[in-house]
Image 1 (cartoon, helix red, strand yellow):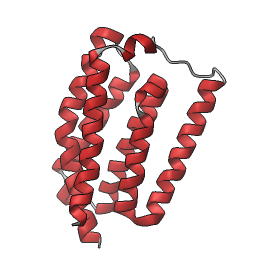
Image 2: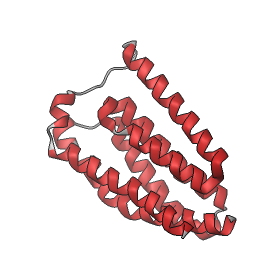
Image 3: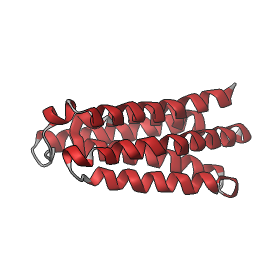
Length: 171
């Protein structure tokens, strides 16, 4: 099974590496409308890391590749939540992380991923509800801009391609 999971991890990395290009472009495109946001630096760092890991994937153990995949998704989700609240599309990323964790690491990995997702949502939701965190931009304005929708579209494609790559590897 580990050989299959290793091939699946490689497919996910390749899909993520390809779709990180338009994803990063869409993220940075928003600078002209909402200004520089910390999530954009996070997007650039994650894209760079995914590209490096993908290039070196044959030299990196499966577990590390799997953890990098899940870590990237969790960082994207958390960054989205913290910078853009519910419009950051963090919760679909957490769903994808749970699916991929269960494919890569079994039921236990999926359950751990669900637990982490619950912690993220509860902690960030509490912080926003208690007014400890505030969204640093006008969400009404961001919700009507083409750049935001382009990023959501590319993010959907990125996460979906990872899930599809994983399921193709199972067949």
